[in-house]
Length: 407
Ligand code: PMP
Image 1 (cartoon, rainbow, N blue to C red):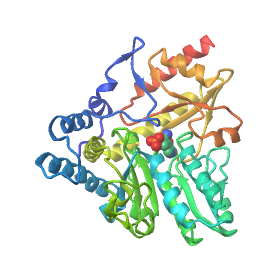
Image 2: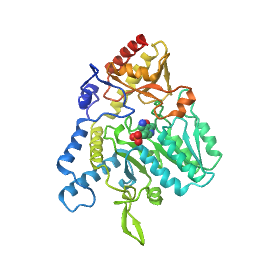
Image 3: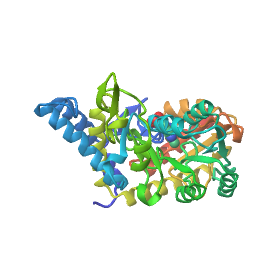
Image 4: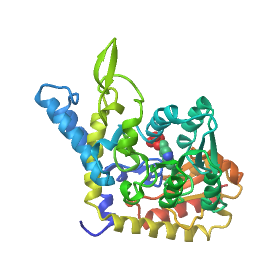
């Protein structure tokens, strides 16, 4: 593995080599989705050019090739997450579908009236709403674990909520997409287990920034999206402990998820296929396999250190801008800088940055409850990946200077 060199790595991402609105693109919307290295784009093209076929059922060479590449990606993913078995890894459409799968399958079959589900107050909507839906159906409740003004989860409050009893599931983000806070998930999982609850971790904002070991974490479920990990959209992952997944009913019915079907009754397929009804996003899964190969060839510790240096530099510069307020100042953060400019609506700031070639996200970031807690409609969010540079940060602040003059 070569030492980390952002300029060299940047060259692997063709989309970054373009002008937007007359300026070289500065892409700072990595928390929404990451860009794809050439190797991923190539793997998807190669699949459609050479191997396109349906998986698992073909009696011909292309179908064999497609199936092998599709299942090889699962094995790569197993190594990437250090899962004990590849059948613990379910392909989904994304984080959202992975969480919906658990809420619908585990939730419907396990929750009783009066049971409690805990989520953090800074959760993404996709780790709130599926639980609210199943809770309404089963007579259970969904309760927020408090978060302080810096964006740090209150662990002692979590402990007290667990001690009050009847908590069946703690569903918590590994990293907040709106604030960047890294939650102490090892402790959260251990506390949940000590109280007899299960724990699902939403890793959508974690996997792109640091390695995740699901066995070391001892989480029951871990969900994320390939598109935030330099892979394609349309593919996500649900990791679940085998014993739990075995006991869960299927989420969707159809082809692939069955062993035999008759009008007298149907037998379901084994894991992981029991949860993979219908034709999957084969090209997407293979493209994601290429993204894992790409990451395995990268100095990830070096990449993480580079991102942290960019964040520190950006926040230092931000503190010198009059009227700029940082939102989310937890001690442990990924490279996400959420902020407000006094007197300016975040959407206007975003539009004026875009006119200068700087792409950020604005709004509530699908985390409305934490925005409500802070009493703000949303933020401007600049989120850095390892292919960003100090020059990108300088461009952001030069553009913000112009925004401040304009507004
Ligand atoms: N959880 C978090 C923390 C996220 O950041 C996102 C994406 N913004 C999601 C869940 C949902 O991911 P997807 O839209 O890919 O399903």
